Image (spheres, rainbow, N blue to C red):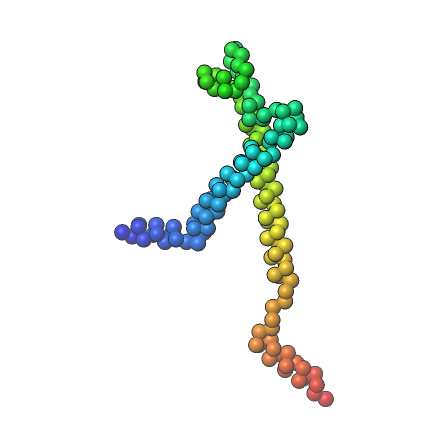
Length: 138
């Protein structure tokens, strides 16, 4: 019974819950980025590079030639899918840039909050009044 209580205390700590939320949001964000790369960015890039579909680029490791990746996949031929790797690199760059922009924005917001001086505490106000009274004495 004690182990269940310890586990419950562990799971309900703020860091664990925050991490779980971060992972869930990260997975959803990853799907969005994958869609942006595959459905929005790669078609124009492919058009600029001569209508090349990066996902279909592969290196055939077998002695039998295959016209398309689908043909090679149909017979489970050994291939190196370097086009999929190119897509993954582009996805990573986009995600890294998005994270960079979010961190940059957060840092800017934090600096603005730090720049505002905190109002004096009651003790500080009292000390200021005492100082002013002492300065006013002849």
